[in-house]
Length: 301
Image 1 (cartoon, rainbow, N blue to C red):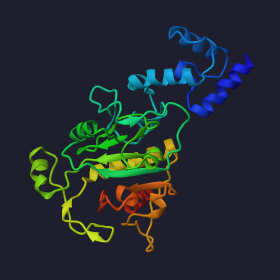
Image 2 (tube, one colour):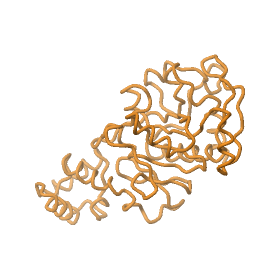
Image 3 (cartoon, rainbow, N blue to C red):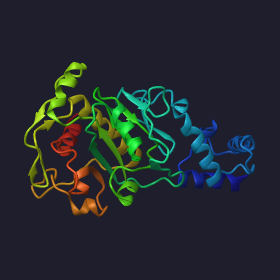
Image 4 (cartoon, rainbow, N blue to C red):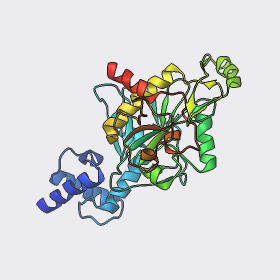
């Protein structure tokens, strides 16, 4: 029994599962019995050990209805994000997971499943969706065969579309996708859409006139709502705790956030929070959103 207990401790460290996945609290004989019962029910080898096969099976089972496994209390609120099947609290009151009734889910085939060793997530990549809502954005992503782990809607609601363990197709290359998670912050970008926002009760968006990306000034465009920026800060903080993504961004020679694509980011050697344009000069999102300024605000709160 001791050998099995030690084995389960090792695979727990390697794969990220916990005794609570089997309704247990400790690595002991009771846990072994619970694992065997799960294996028996699923017609698997009843060895009481959580190897790769048992892990993949229970990971997928939990993932289908992840909200059924939500913790009852976290100490800072009742909302969580999910990384490798485990819950991490987020200090934000509007968070919806993919399996909840009003959730938004990335379609199978639009991302790469990574049911195994906990992946090393280096970067958090910010995008704007050029859509009127997160629901519209998710529909487009599914139709295009791409994905992102998070969406932030007009009212600040954060949608998680998949477990952050999985690799979303959002950052342009296999390497960047494998090393990151991303968010699409809804913003239709073009000034003509302000009428829609007002008509639908969200209020007028501010206009940005001096956004610079890779040395070029962008056309006047819509800003994000303040509530979206606050949601973004809460999400950064939660991802820092869950995935150890550093709360820093890439800086220029003036010690301010870079507004250019940066080689250190493009080569995958940066850990922190970036915009899509930091990865490639073919993108402009999210021009005008100062990550460094928001991080400084977080430090003063």
